[in-house]
Image 1 (cartoon, helix red, strand yellow):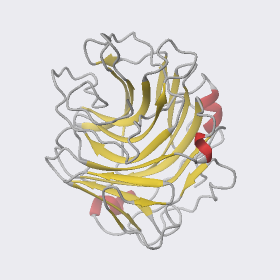
Image 2 (cartoon, rainbow, N blue to C red):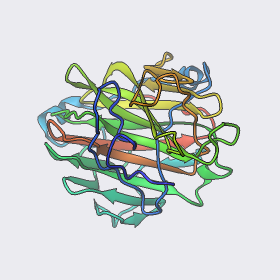
Image 3 (cartoon, rainbow, N blue to C red):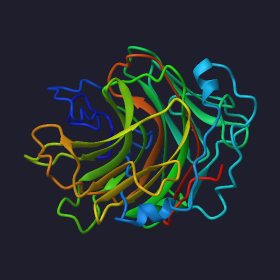
Length: 330
């Protein structure tokens, strides 16, 4: 079953390290109905190599805090689209501003829930005139996502090891919830795993720590028979700033290694080897994170629980490839 729609913790509504009897959230699917998880796995030290030569890119964080529009582009990275299998700068859609639920443009189809808005605007960008902007209201369970699948180069042969990065800006107030996501990949479990035939997903997301958003990985595996949905997480100590950050990742479904990096640092801010740090019962925390043979991905912001404050996220210069992807130079 390829679906993100869940009504309890048996979905991609990770409760993470927070003990809950029911997530009570409402996920969503792309219009194709394919599930989309988020993968950030990597083959051991490969993730560090992917970002070792990269340098941090930061924008005018103060503009986000003040709520005022940036004066032009925040930074000027080199063109990331020369050879990548998927590169999206959100500048090729002059007729697209406000994005509606089920709207299609370019390689994308949208999912949007009441309580959120999604558009392409120029308030915060790292290249060109536009970036993807998702706003989620306070006290709601909502969000907006763009899904891609089908005949895109990145999905040829359903890869099991991919790399990527995105520029992400979060404005003040930097609202939290129990869990919200910003990127994911999914597909049937990789062919060499013992769970073939079940949909698997790796997700980049936020989990709260000490009242602030921190970066995290989430894993999902479709239920089968007496084995319920696997809903697991691993959390970083790194806070998600109200400023531009380059988030890069390396995901290897076969090796079950996930790495996440920030601003081109050599050392990861979060690593998963085989399994993470927390699972929703009755899944054991030591259960392996069997990764997907990827046939879909998503980007956007979606909260699976009521927000404690509004959230505004801009995402720009998304790159996903079968070789390491560095963060742009400042």
